[in-house]
Figure (tube, rainbow, N blue to C red):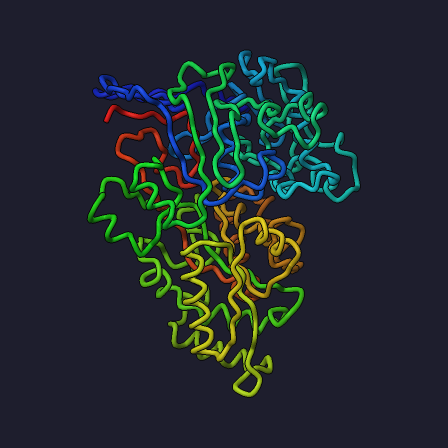
Length: 539
């Protein structure tokens, strides 16, 4: 039987107001402020505004306003129409997307199916070296991995424009949640005409053409990124904000000070040591819902002392995660005894060694393992721990280094770097241990577990395990939910056994939001937010 999905905008009605899940939803009777300008905090300066050159959430926050994919997310993280007004499939392997008649670029030209073909081929083209090329392979788009590996031409990618409005996507296996995957920024369409005209300069102010709700008005590196509404956006009439300013501040205390001074309307985070004071002073402005993300340390599995599995396991075991979550952080974070967060859909975790032993028992095993690796009082282990600038990262690094020193006699050199330098060090493998985190690109365990696959570009540890790859491959083919969950748990067991990473805690989406700023989807577990849904009440 053919499965047909036609989702226009979801409307929910109650006695107070009508909610349109696709746009800013102002309650009936609400009085808007005359000035609809928002200042949003970014944790770092974006590495690039080009969707294929994004490296993480910092870039995604801005790109979600400048571009739009086939689907977008509602306030709960469910896929709803973006550029595509509907989609259908007969077998979950071949998907047909029908584009909106009124989907346009910010220069007024129509967005077509051919634009998606060009953009997705550009993503996987190995000459472009996209940090997110792996996403097309993870989504199982036909021939994606072969193209990335240089074995086929980009034109062989399983995406075809049947006509101006119809896009056909062929997958290598059935993926029932494929529409959810198309919300990711790596699959955004980009304007071929602009890229061919300006080359690498196409993302600059005055050159950048997007199809999102906003356009790039101004940019001063490390100071601000200013956006204004795109008059050609298909849902422009429901855009309330007249200006969005993103401010990159990598020190949470500085961002919080500016928030409290009224310079910022919403922060990406806040210093954990201020949590109790903030809850006392401005409790209605503090938000900490669970988030689909895990904070972890990655070990260099290819060189240095952490190449030895015994060293990695010892270091992972000696981290007292309860102290990190309750004492160092203390804002509702959960201990991460496995990589995949508890809030992940279709995942029921089974116990790992971190659940089966108490901390004293883990510490004892860690000492035995490190001694077996040849380290002890007369030959102490020396290593570096790299993290990008942030008070929280620093506090955690200091705490972990202290644990390793006290329990195992390890001498730790703490290295902190600005975001771009940190990314360079991460990509070149210039670390022994490195702070990392992952927030799911979609709500399913594979978004986390695939990260440690041997061919995954996001595999910071450069971990290689044939058995692990085979388990992931089997899980990708499994149709039965219980079978797939069992395979996901087997993958988690392998991670615990080999310790390419040390999961530390599961994220909460901690941030500060002014009481007059409304429309932020605080319950979205992936923390996907579009400025198009925001508005400001009179205050």
